[in-house]
Image (spheres, helix red, strand yellow):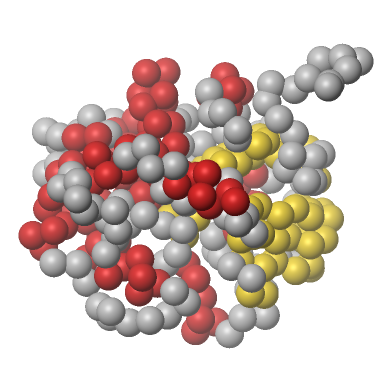
Length: 281
Ligand SMILES: Nc1ncnc2c1ncn2[C@@H]1O[C@H](COP(=O)(O)OP(=O)(O)OP(=O)(O)O)[C@@H](O)[C@H]1O
Ligand SMILES: [Mg+2]
């Protein structure tokens, strides 16, 4: 698999830490202030497009209806809405775990609804996912869970070790690398799940309530990690109920789902919302 070109994956997988040089340290490279976000935004194009998407589970009424929006490459988006509004369902469509019942979804400019099944893995590899229920591999240690995307990409073990060790430290689990998921707390499992999702620097990161099980300090720290990834050009989509968290990311955009419908289909609603009746210059 190493070096194989499929849907642009090679560029990323051949050197997952593309900005490793000259900084020897992955996180140092992540945190470099090279202004990547600015560069990306200059040529922003739609990386995700939903057009009149509907999703129905079985014979039930639609869980998602008439969902239309575009996400731009290098953007940082929050998805909010009450429990049961359809956030996880929308994210599943986005990371190709679910096909819509109707409508068009384009990822990286290609229609993924009609895409032959055999091409889906190539698209999925370009998307990092933090699942609401973590989905760690239970028989693998925290270290091996985080290393998984790099091993799948064929990276050398010597390089993997440096990246995984650093990522474990970053999420505050430097001494828990050998622990199995069942022996970790919910918050610790969540941090392993986040580390696994970001380690290969995906083009899109989709995170479903990624701070639901950690304290405010750790939530802030994890958000910093997402922002560092975003500065390197990754498009970030975070579903969360945590409104104060949303307020902490400058320039982020917010989409709100209300009973399966986007109340702000353009994704342009800013946080905090402007008070009603206040003129904006
Ligand atoms: N696999 C499924 N089969 C049938 N119904 C489902 C399935 N998954 C979700 N639903 C239903 O779809 C609706 C939206 O669920 P979803 O999990 O997308 O909401 P959510 O906004 O993520 O909620 P929460 O904030 O609680 O995570 C709910 O009514 C739920 O019961
Ligand atoms: Mg959910």
